[in-house]
Amino acid sequence: MTLLLDVKGLRVSFGGKEVVHGVDFSVRPGEKLALVGESGSGKTVTALSLLGLVQNAEVRGSALFAGGEREGERDLLSLPQRELLAVRGREIAMIFQEPMTAMNPLYTVGDQIAEVLQLKEGLTGREAWEAAVGALGATGIPEPERRALAYPHQLSGGQRQRAMIAMALAGRPKLLLADEPTTALDVTLRAQILDLLSEIQRQNGMAMLLITHDLNLVRKFADRVAVMENGYLVEQGPVDEVFANPRHAYTRKLIDSRPVRDVTDESAAPASPVMQARGMQVTYPVPIPGIRGWFKKGSFIAVKGAAFSVAPGRTLGVVGESGSGKSTLALAALGLIPHSGDLDVVGRRWGPDAAGNKAIRRVVQVVFQDPYSSLSPRMTVEEIVGEGLLVHEPGLAIPARRERVMQALADVGLSEDQFPGLLQRYPHEFSGGQRQRLAIARALIVQPQLLILDEPTSALDVTIQKQVLRLLQRLQREKGLSYLLITHDVDVIRAMAHDVMVMKDGDIVESGSVLQVLDTPRDDYTRTLVAAAA
Image 1 (cartoon, rainbow, N blue to C red):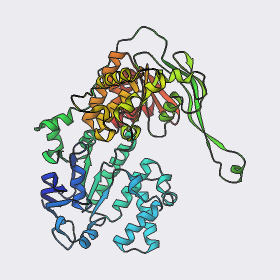
Image 2: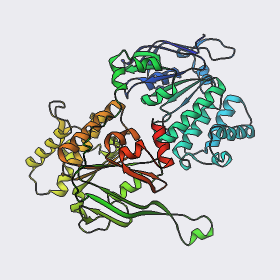
Image 3: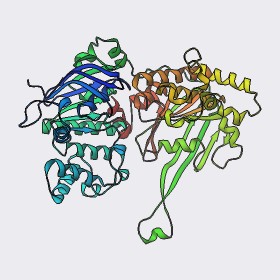
Image 4: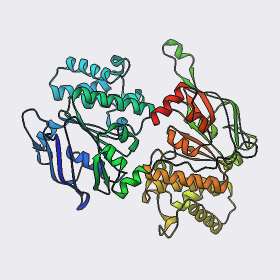
């Protein structure tokens, strides 16, 4: 069969340093090829270099593309800029990882799609607008006429991703490059987007190059897979064959990186809960449209009468999609936003206006989703990890505080032997997984009883995610910690939690032991979540 894209000896260098080393792969018409690897493996640079989208890069090799109707086979890497511009969007289109940053915030999504149609299809303004509305409708967005008038920030994550897909497909390309198209989405939205892409691909006979680190997605979606490590393509072949019999050690490592359950499941003796909530409700003011909004505000109930408890040494998982209320529940549990109802920590009232909050803050600490943004870039490791001691033990001498910092770092697997000058380093000098270890050390140093984990691994690669989960499991066993784990990842819940609550639209629709809820779900919504993660 004639190849649509044939890449040979692709090499990409920055400032004389080569980051992609002689990569060879091909894509057939109508085929779905997944390019797989962790952050830094070179997969995104490889894809972007095909369209000349990598700045200040030296690109060598060849990428023969046979997608044109009249031009025949052309080498994308040697095309003049004017000809390459004609290929972009018309013959080869791209879906970027984060549509919020890829789309222009100053233009409606309809205008942005229409612009592509005017440039690539030569349509008039009215024709392009009507086609843009039709393209949005084809992606399954409800009320496409109204959504076309919305700005990117006015759409949900799933709707923005659908708008990005509509924009990419507006020129009816032969090849679609999809860079982590579902990474930022919930499991059910992820399944919807994959189904949408598969349906469009079947209808249009379009080929796809999928860039991802999600092996579960690859298993469900792709025909063939190519695995990259440190800029080298180490293995490729049909998905079933590679997954069943991986030849390279790195491929085996990726396949074996699914979270593993390693927690103590024995029922503990009854004990007073570390945290307990009864009838906890969080309400946000919202504007009322029209003249009535001049005189009063409306309200939106984000968490509706939640009741839960976290036992000593156990993990309560809270799972749900974006907008379910789980992050709002976490903020209330941290005492950062007002709520009604009762919330007690170690038997004491807890909330933004509660007396004695400072003492309770030592009991409840938090690890946020993105360690890069939650650690101050201006502070050293010693300052970041030791900051809690300045608040809760201000009389501690500097040598004793430094010793405590070193112990906290050792607890999370960081030492001077690995990182000379560790205490004086800054967050940017560490990898994503190492930064998350720093965030955990910062939380542990004040010797808390409860950690609130807000999507602690969703920003990490699969192998690093497994390492961080193992660390949290070990710390729970050794220190008797309790966790309130907030996530949309059912696999993480299954690996970490003892009990689980499923949230939807602010309500707790199902709760119980993790094995009971995930293995025999009673609620339709829970069944949908579990099925989407399978």
